[in-house]
Each structure stands twice: as structure tokens, then as C-alpha cells.
Amino acid sequence: MSAIKFGTSGWRGIIAEDFTFEAVRILTQAIADYLKTHHEDKKGVVVGYDTRFMGNRFASEVVRILAGNGIKSFLTTGPTPTPAISFEIMRRKAGGGINITASHNPPEYNGLKFSSPSGEPALPAVTREIEQKANEMLLEVAYSELSMADARQKNLLEDIEPFHFYAEGLRQKVDMTVIKKAQLEIGVDLMYGAGRGYLDRILENAGCNIQVFHNHTDPSFGGRPPDPGEDNLAVLIKAVKENGYDLGLALDGDADRFGIVDRDGAFIEPNYVLAMLFDYMIRVKQLSGGVARSVATSHLADAVARHYNMPVYETPVGFKYIGELITTGKILIGGEESAGISIRDHVPEKDGILTCLLVTEMVAREGKSLKELLNNLYKRVGRLVTKRENVHLGNIPKKSLANMLVKPPKTIAGLSVKEAKDIGGVKFLLEHGCWLLLRESGTEPVVRLYGEARDEDELERIMKAGRELALGK
Image (cartoon, rainbow, N blue to C red):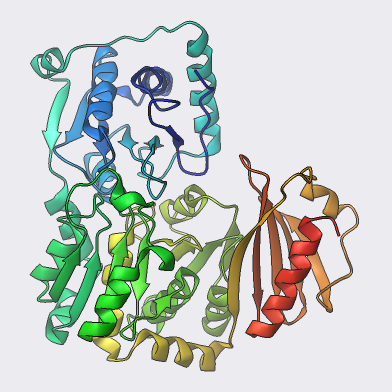
């Protein structure tokens, strides 16, 4: 059995190869031990799952191990969005949450995410402790378990339905009256995921006329990853164009990520959605506060922050770091380039449903397309364009990118390097607000490139220079 290792958002593996019942039992026992050590076991644990193959069976194994350790489970009655599970952890003041999900990964994957009592993804100090316990048990398995029937009989299992509480929480943060007045026509792609019966139901209750796609169970997700990027939203984009919808909205497999399509069928980059919502919340909703973004996320949000004299927090990749800033009340909104956003006084976890609803409110209130709103934002704070790509190294051995910090280049693509730093990758801050980031993949011979510039031509020069740096040219 392979070693258990948490990534940026939980532990994931290929079903039947890495992600097995035995591995889930062992990891759950390690979590139970952690909860006991830190005196969180008496509060119970919210347990949920998404629409992946045998998700409910894996969740049942989690419940059985927790029950064997005398820890009560609050088990969702069906596939449930990650943000709804986070909301339920906070509402119940539970000791944490265990969610069987691989989010946007391909269909052959499943995963286990552990959340803290504050509802945010567990921080590295926590997951390292759990990893160590789990990997020690791989050598000598030692877990306690009860049957589901015994767990119920001993009051260590309670079935829960989180929708109504979560939906009410959203209604307190999104102006449903504005949405209802606009009578918007919206295409909604649920990507066969756990957002089914959540986003579509809330929009219908808000008076929107919606057409829903991919809203039935399919553990193969139509043969592609349930990732709401432009490449996977052809059906939604076509429908928005042909039917003249005001908006297209999409969610990933566990509904923590979003995809946004404008009325002309143009896909709107998540990078820009963060900045647009930050601006909207200050300019229109009259809220105030800072913004957090991951190191790989566009600095357009920084430009908005400067415009309103608000602070900016740059974090390593992984929403758990942004979640911590939400929990401590330091920011109004936080997000990352991979389509994860949440806001103050909400869950400290990515919430694709919330983001889709806030975008719907913004379009309803402003009466403009998203492109119009983005161009108006550019006029006020300046234009930035951003891009991400992978550089496949092939047979070239991976070099430590950290070595670039020893003697960083003085210029990149003809732009002077103002600063070079390591924050989950090597990031070069260039003149005129441009930048380049190189991040090594932990599992593949790949370097991930991220760049930002004032226009497309300048951006392509920066990305070309990045490719050369990654290949050691």
C-alpha cells in the first residue's frame, strides 16, 4: 500500500490502487487519534461525500471507524457540496469534518479531505501529524470499528440534510431580491457533481429561468474530469450563445470551484472574477476589507485594493491559507486562480455556489455583461492579462527552481527583475507590474508557469522566457 500524503487539498489516489477501503480505514483511525489527542472527539464529526464511484460506501467506512473510537458522525444523506459540509461543521460546532471527494480530479480518482472545527481545510501542521500516524499504521494495521447498525444503536451516527441551513446562510450574503427582479435566463452545468439540487434549486427559488445540464448521477463524469474550465464547458457555452442566456454558470465535482460564461459565450477567467467581485463588494455593496490571493493568482485584485486603499495578502498555493485569513477576519474576500473563492463571515473554504450567486447578483444589479464590467474595471485600475501553462520536461532532469534565487536573472523578457522570492514556487516580480512564477509539480516532470503582463504580446514574451528558464536554456 502506498504511503498516505496530503496535497494542497486532502489526500487523493486512484480508486482500487491507492484509494482503497483499507487505506480509508487507516487514515480515519489516524484522524480519530488526532481528534482524541487534541480533545475534539466529543463534538462529533460531519461526514460527507460527492458523486464519485462508491462515495457513500467509503463514507460508511469512515463512520464505522469513528464509531469504533466512540466518535459520533453526522452523515449527509446524499452527495453534498464541500462548502455545505464546511458550513455544517461551523453550524454544529463539530470537532471537524471528513469529506470523501477528489473535487475536480479525473473520474478514476477519489480522495479524503479533513477540515478543522473552523470549517477550513486542515493546515499543514495538522495533516503532517495525521500523515505520520497513518503511515505508521500501514506497517501494522490497528484500527477500531463498529457496524453501521451498532453505531446507530449507540447514538454514534446521525443522518443530516444540510441544504436548508446552508441555503439560508447564502441568502444572508447574496441579495436574492435583486436577482429576482432581473428575471435572468441562465444555463447551469452541474457536471454530474454534488452541486445538483443546490445551485439550480437556489436559482429557481430566486425566480431565474434556468436550463440545467449534466444533473444526473454518472461516476464517470461523462468521461472527463468534472473541472469547470473552458475546455470542459462546450455544451454550456454553445447553449448560452444559441439561446441568448444572460449568463452561464458551472460547478466542479464537489461544487467548491466555479466556471463562468458571459452572455456571448465567452469564458471568464477565474482570476478576473475575483477582482470583479472584490470591486463590486466595495463599490456597490459598500463593504470594506482586504483581499487574499494565492501566489499564482492575478494581481488585478491588488490593483483594485490599491484603488480603494485596502490591504493585500499573498499566500502559498492551497485555499487553507486563505481560509485561515477568513477565519481570523482579516479579509473581505479571498481567492485563487484555480477558481476558488470565499468571503468574510462565510465558510473559510472554496465555495463555487456562493461565487456563482454573487456573479448572478452582480450581473442582475449592474445590468451589464461581464465583459463590459471587466472593461470598466480596467479603465479604473489598469489592464492586466494573465496566463498559465505547463512545461513538460521529458527526459530533462528536474532542477531545483530554488537555485534560481541564489543568482536570479537581472532581466526577463526585457523587463528588469525587481524582486525574486520563494513562496511555494519561484516568483519574479518585474517592472510595470508584470510577473512570472515557476512551480515544480510534486508528481510529474512538469514545471507550471504563470505569468501576467499589460497586454497579450508582452505576456507571450514573458511566458517564452519562462519556458526557457524551466528548460535550463
